[in-house]
Length: 267
Image 1 (cartoon, helix red, strand yellow):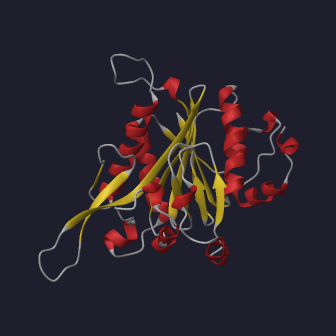
Image 2: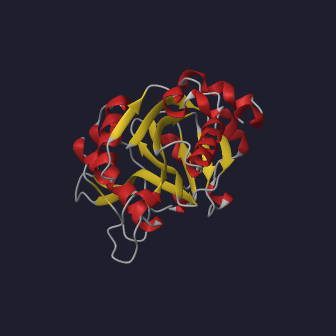
């Protein structure tokens, strides 16, 4: 069983701290597998392979738009997170999921990423958006038709990004699906270091706003199907952590207050 906890909108550093604590608890077997679903306040993140040159906006431009910058230990290059983008952080022990490969027992990194892509492909399909993988690239892409007077041409646009970190079999970080995202934020960077391909969103593809709650539920259902697991929605951190763990298990609305606390408050 995989628990699902929807957190609303939180800043990136708060989300990172929560991930770190849950990763430690998962490694110790004190909590089960969980998927955090949330939105972030505007932020640019740099993965382990990121090149700072892929942030093309000036510090002044970023400050005017209220965009922070954070380095993190996920794979991948530069990406943007912000309102209208559904971010999913699966904190799961991959050793509990059998591999389809004959050469290994449990999920490896590549197979895990492929399954995350499959979750996103199925989710977009349920909203009538055909998507696909592109060989040699990580993420999920849709085919758009350029609006031209004559001779319309097709090009691929990225609708979802992936970046994961795996330590002692426990995966963290995860996926970011552009639902109603303000795509102008991606002009501040070269998304994932790929200058030749545009970024899109479900809103752009469908020509209308999409319910974030509906997308969250569809994504959760597809996660369960792809990982062959039952999904259990929780109402709060209390439901996940329990009061016997010595962790200040707070409702999602209070997560912002954790940002200013010392790590010892979590001990």
